[in-house]
Length: 365
Image (tube, rainbow, N blue to C red; front, top):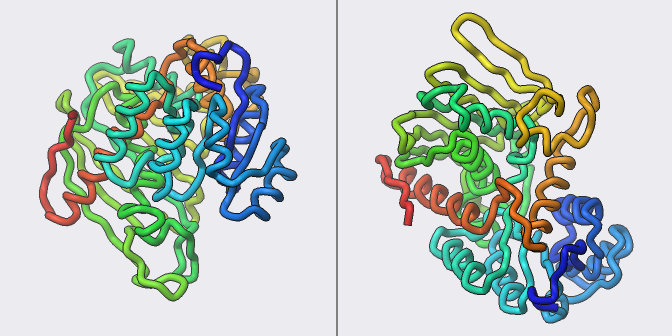
């Protein structure tokens, strides 16, 4: 089915991949009313198991799934395969939801974004932390002038799932995961939030990386475990960011704090129901309450105050907005292939700075 045949009805989808992210995408697709038409994985046996467990109508090989020209294809495969699968889906006439990183380098990510645009097709990238209501509240306060001009940003994204030398994953090898691991995997979320919430852009940066374990699973490690960077924003603000997958006790510690001339705002992903607002004379702790929040935050508050929303709720909202975009609607703040390309540009700048030891300008091209 080509894009011309789409209507406002939820689409039929194909899923490439059968791991954790494919399961998360599937839950969100089902919540959005999509028809789970077909799934492909690394082997026929794994695809068949996933189809049965997740409720897909068919298990297919990847090329067979792509040839079906389904309205929407979700790409949840290892990073190195994202460009090839996303491009093949676009050329078959499918809209694409592709996991980040969109590509393992900025040039390919830009090419993919340009191809989707030229074809008149939607490409979306799940920077799903945008979909926490209190993130939208922080963004609305800054955009509305309540926070004042942005002075500083500070953020961290800390995990511990690769803490020990015995911890291994396909992302560790540059051949499958790309030349950046920690930053491309989770740092991309952090810098996307910095720019999305602040309404400003990272203009230049200086970064350093560390690889704690030289070997994992019997093979050399050629990607980073942690990254520290200092950033300058186009509007004059400055900031520091820390990313690590070897921080004991931190499971998904994404934190963003932005200080303006009037107030500061702080969001913590592991406690997403509140937003700290700091002022010189006093501080506020805003709870997620659709009756009192900005319209942008209230739209994403699907449960009454006191009934916690979390990661899957944010993911469901992202997928619903992506499908709305496919249907011709224009929901605000949907992360597209352009945003995926932007994250790849920043990742390339981080790697370049870590190699050179100096400041790098972040391209806007």
